Length: 162
Image 1 (spheres, one colour):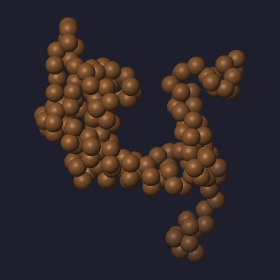
Image 2: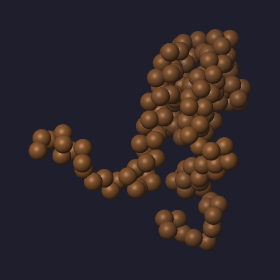
Image 3: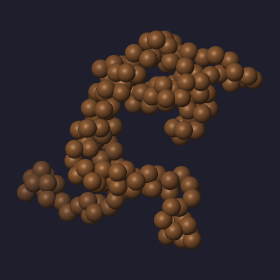
Image 4: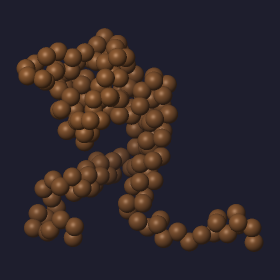
């Protein structure tokens, strides 16, 4: 038996694991989004930052880092790149904090981001029955909150990890 025939018939106990399926699905979705965003010379993390600044003009770099779960040391080069690209402006607000706003180019780019993300989301949301879409998002939010140590929504009396 050649190696291709053997590997194509492997039993895969991973197929029944939630975490495995989430990781594989996330990889597929992020690859699709990354490919789409390349057309406007952005990466998913940069598109996320622009989207949040658009929704929260005047926010700070620290606000963005907390919201996206990005450490300060990693936010610095991301913001520097977006500023150098002419997409984000900074204005002092007190102390060392700076308010962030999109430039005109940033506003144009974020409109493209919204269109790209809309098409990307539609591609995958069509796989869910309309009545299941919000439930699926709720479950994913619960998983994320569980991992981030947020208070449990299901039964707060249960210890984390059970």
